[in-house]
Image (cartoon, rainbow, N blue to C red; front, side, top):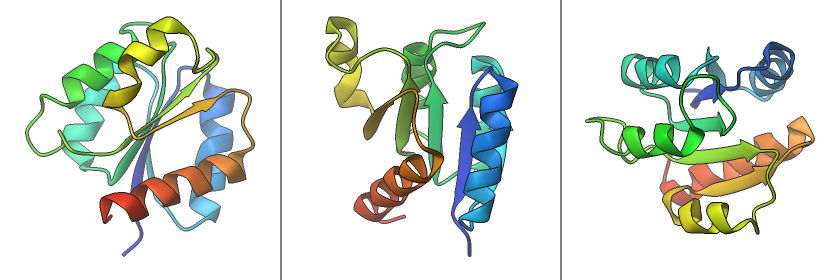
Length: 125
């Protein structure tokens, strides 16, 4: 069975590009364009991994991570953060331990796919 990934980004062009690449790599894909819809989709779809942009219109990405970690059935789902903020930023360092990987934009889609594959392999998914 193909691994399922939830892609979350409010920029529709980025979301579409990621969706095409993950599907081509053999993933089942579900998408969301806001923090609230990401939480709903996570519960409904039970993805194997979440790729999450931090800059969402309704909820801060770190708040989405916090809420995901509190939801039954998806609390242990691996999260790969996709952000325009450098991972050495003080705020990021404070939250980095709550996610499995941190990728800085711009990112090559194939690199992101490989990062998700490595995260899934480490988590047993």
